[in-house]
Image (cartoon, rainbow, N blue to C red):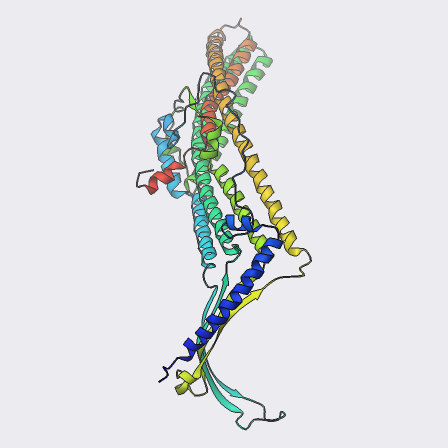
Length: 507
């Protein structure tokens, strides 16, 4: 008695036997192709059965120490910059930071790019499995011409078909695995891009907040000097009315007053523009934030900044990690291009049922199918494939240089922030003394201006100098804070709040 074998099982059994013999042949052919190509068999095996180079992190040009590492005010201990803005001990700044983190639209855009990169990575991973898995079904009424040679008698007929198609290219040379490597690196780069956007956002919020406080202080100084200069204008006009004054004194005093008034208007413009920028950073429509912020002095700045060592930049700065991940992604693309030199091996199959009458469709005699291996090899490509590898390699070299340039710029940005922080402190000491003495001279000139024998030109000079020195002092005080912010920004501080939030901590 002979057991019944379903046509599908019979087809699969025959195909398996033939495919085994065919696979041995194409395996030998593939190994020959590998040995005759640009990679050796040992390298192919050591690469995990993947052609192309395995990624190695490129060298990074970092200094051994900061220029001012031994200066007072610079601490080279490893910094903890999770919430670096808290060094200002300003509750309003802390609130602005939290609001910007939760609402900023540019940051949300960076977050959606992570979702897109993750989906792209999953698509790349899906190529490791059968690339085509397609079900089909068809019911048709057909008619053939009766005027052709050898016409058939039944030229009108029905046909029904249902089945499944499958195509699976085996990742023999690592083309799809290299694609997953590249997509993984791109996903990492998108996460680092989000963290970099977060670093920039937090520093921009803090910098704009300090800018607003500086403008408020400069406006306050200008308003105080307008009162002083208004009194001097009155003294000059009273002298002129009394017949003991000169028009030159009156002209000087009025010119000085109107110039300070114009300066105040210019500072009001700057304050409004800073207010508008802060609104965008907070992710809210532009409105007047000053009632919420109040009129406060600059927050106190700590006397020293913790900078660590230059080599820590490679670990801390998200933009450097992003640049390095882009190098890794491009390295994998070289392997993808290299795999095009070799034959591609696939398994193709179609299984289904086909019959004229629908009632016979799912019977054993209506079974149709084909299954078997397939090889495709691009030959006589006139150097296109080799030049494709050269193209990807050139792009790889470009990303390496971009990464190394980014490292150099990162070191410069830290140095710029440190020198601004240190030198602005020294500048404030001198300007504080200068503004103090200028204030004494200006107050004295107001008192002496009531004496008709006093030369009002001296009052003009002292009052004008006071305006300049106080304005420079306010800017220099802001530069201390801005230098500190610039250092923390250059060190890549602040992105950790995203990581802490993922752990369940409050940002």
